[in-house]
Amino acid sequence: MIAVIPAIIITFNRDHSAQLGLIVFGAFALASGILLVLAGPRTLTVAIDRSLFLIHGIVSMIAGALALGFHTGGHGFFLFIVSVWGAITGFLEIYAGIRLRARPLPAKDWLFTGIGGAALALLLLLLPPNPVVSVGLFGAYLVFLVVFLPIAGLSLKGDSPRQRPRATATADPAPANTATNDSDSL
Image (cartoon, rainbow, N blue to C red; front, side):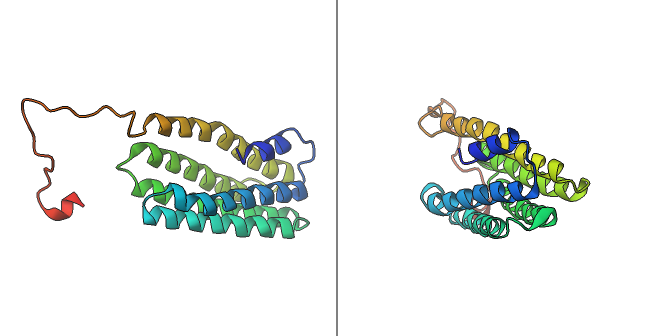
């Protein structure tokens, strides 16, 4: 929900200046960073995941504060701050998704949003420097989040432990752990 207002501002505003981009990015990154720092410890059960998303939140808060503090920094600063933020947070989400391959739904979601952030960073660096294109591309990234994250959240809700079918006993009982040694079962 944090991405909705910034996505609307960029999408329906004729001014795609670097200053508007820095203000909108700064507000989005700061708000999402605060949310990650506050909600991550309560919602993530694995310590490494909590650490990854705590770092993600801190990086977002720092990038947001810098963008708001230097909102007159121009197009070059916008490209720098958003591409560095996208690269770092994208990598963290991709890494979290790869680490969590055993649980496909959150892993796919983290991979997908991580690839989106990394792609944003890459496109900002590769496309010709034009504030309208750069700020519009950030707006498109926000729209991607607005559309994808609710769908991903509903997918996770449908995959809650209460919704999963329970295993029933069969006539041919198989051992619960077929690992060849103890290190495979970890």
